Figure 1 (cartoon, rainbow, N blue to C red):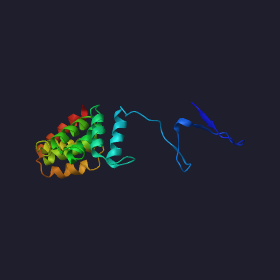
Figure 2: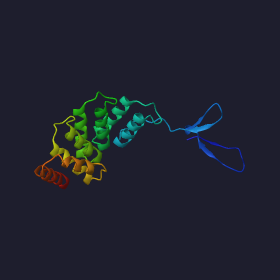
Figure 3: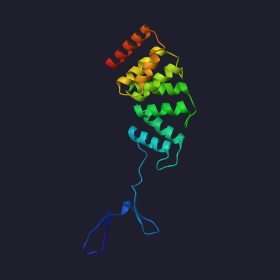
Figure 4: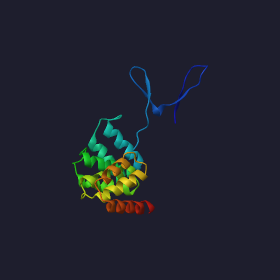
Amino acid sequence: MPFMRSSGASSLRVIPILLMGVFPCGCVSWRAPQQKDPTDAPSQVLLGNRYRQGIGVSKDDEVAAAWYRKAALQGDPEGELNLGCCYARGEGLTKNEIEAARWYQRAADHGSAEAQYRLGICYERREGVPKNFITAYKWYNIAAASGHERAGESRDALAYRMTVGEITLAQRISSEWNAR
């Protein structure tokens, strides 16, 4: 790789020319060489986040959803969760509660506490899935066991609308799920 050396006798600086960009004002900026699109799921999720939030790029929900989909199709729980959120909110994709619940389910099965919590909400409110308090309680309970902060409160609030038998069944089902 070619290098430039400064002419000063007291200091020797080596600057890779391929990484240096010089602006008309004489300022130097560092930029990475051109890279191909990332193929690993975590990088795809991060790129999706940048487009969703407009960090370093123009905010573009459609592009964000496309990056989340690439990560989700690789089985990445964060990609699956974020894709579900795009469907739930209609951000970058047509709003579709059934698709949102489907992606939350995949992420929940892969251990995402946030997806487990959101799936509980779906079952409690009949968003993309049939209303089912036992299943909602199950997912809240699993999310709480995974450390989700609001899941325990949601589970306990839902319990007031359930019978003792339903709660017992939901606890057993969630225990079996956690034991697998």
